[in-house]
Amino acid sequence: MTVALGDGVGVLGRLVDGTSVCEALSNAASEVGDVKLVVGWLPEPADGLDAQSFARVTVLMPGGGARRLMQSQATHFVPGRFSAWPALLTGRLKPELLITRVVEHAGELHFGSEVSYQRALIEAGVPVLAVVDEATPKASAEPPLSPDQVVIIGRSACGPAQHHREPDPLHEALADSVLRFIPAGTRIQYGPGPLGTALLRRAQVPLIVDTGLLTDAVIDLERRGLLCGTPSATYLTGTDEFYDWADGQPILHGVEYTHDLTRLSRGLPFMAVNTAVEIDPVGQINAEGRGDKLIGGIGGHPDFCAAGRMHPRGLSIIATPSVVNGHSPLVDQLSRPASTPASDVDLIVTENGYADLRDADWPLRRRRIAELFGV
Image (cartoon, rainbow, N blue to C red; front, side, top):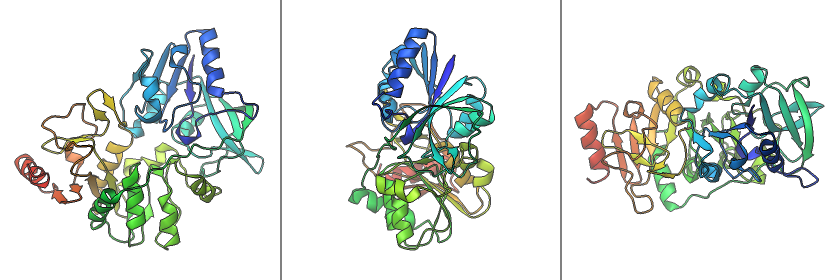
């Protein structure tokens, strides 16, 4: 059979008696034989999960906590934009079982610190083995899970993993360069990492947060009276203070909502702010890594860039320092396949300036990008 493992910062840890759920799953898979595993986004390694115990491990988001899994010959990365995950997981990769973490609220079961692709599996009728975690926030805006579909296999008090990086002065300068293009009252999407934190902390106008992954910095935005309405995301990731803040708020939706191109590209202006590992001379983006070195994954990068590009009053912004770990992100040729096509990029922004590509043909794109990076 194929088993899907709930992802995000709420990936299963240990039960109250100390049992590692992922270790128990790995042992069971090894004993049974020919069991396949599907995992999505793991910001931290899953405690006790052994790829060698499975006939095949399919990873949808390499990098982060999945790097150790990727070292196994049993593991394969299936590329795909985040919005395509529900179709993939209810089609060719459909599991017979979802094992995940849930929270109990008013006698009902809910997803807690992430919804991600799990709602699609629920709608497809996939049965659930669940661990009820008393320390996980209830931040889902989705309906409760049907008790007929869920079997509770244990309880935990681990809570979600803490995952946070502070921005440095370079990220703050980069955020200031980006924020000049973000007017008041618009919807903003930002990627994971210190740039997103800097963007929300340094914003000076009211914003609506409509993103894939929500982080600590939204608290600062709220404290300064600049957060409009309730944020929308499909994952939480941050510190205990942030998880306490999110508890009880209807923030999280399934990826079918958060990454829906039609919804994002209509209504209030939508500003997508994402970064890049590599940029080629015409603006194709590689967001995964350099060569064989994985840093992240495709994820929602192409979804949000396309939505920002398509919105009549939106923007697709690629924001990157001019030099990262001694390397310029501008390369002659991408070392991995393109994550996002050049046609879905409006602006490339560094701490030193920007290249506006909205009206540029291929030769002009080359000139403007080269000028931005001093080539």
